[in-house]
Image (tube, rainbow, N blue to C red):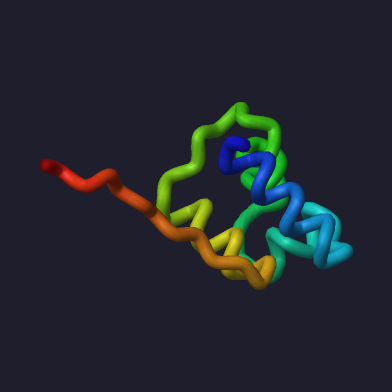
Length: 66
């Protein structure tokens, strides 16, 4: 699952439109649409902020270096 798919799922679980999520995150609705579609690979900060606005968190797991 890529970031856009995770964002869409979180937004839909909340029952929000792209416009509502954009308003909650303080971004243009076109940004949400582009990230969800994969047309714009959102930065860690952007995706994290959008997911937080949808009530979700994102975590980064790095493999251990032996």
